Image 1 (spheres, helix red, strand yellow):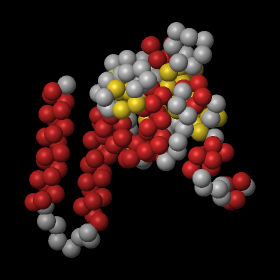
Image 2 (cartoon, rainbow, N blue to C red; image 1 turned 90 degrees about the vertical axis):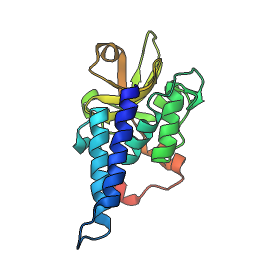
Image 3 (cartoon, rainbow, N blue to C red; image 1 turned 45 degrees about the vertical axis):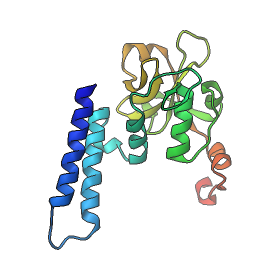
Length: 193
């Protein structure tokens, strides 16, 4: 853990030094920002084991990165301790600006089911772990990886892992009608064609 933190600190230190000392003549002001975003995207995709092409939502990956290692606490909803549904609710609120329900089973009522092979970045993944009903939830990142608050804390796991593969129930995408209700933005009539 200490090595990871040290590596991350070193990486950002190098980025900061490069940004301060690098002078490139005849470039527009937004080019260095694009380069830094590209470096950050590459770095986060390596840490999370997700292909660079799958990391289109940097806000999602930055949110997950900030929460990695947060301890698990049933009923918790802060960085002092969080459970899976509270982590998902916070992520959807801050990344997608949607205020979803608090319980994984209630959240499932807000989605349209999606097959494992059709999951996209930001979709939800639901599990029935030692239960007949949904008991765990996570957020799909790409490359069969998902972020969640497990008993070991906020982590990134693989749907291919024997444990999660065994208990995987369904994927889900928040229904358009709930997105409209939650965001308060009426649907665009062009989307209905």
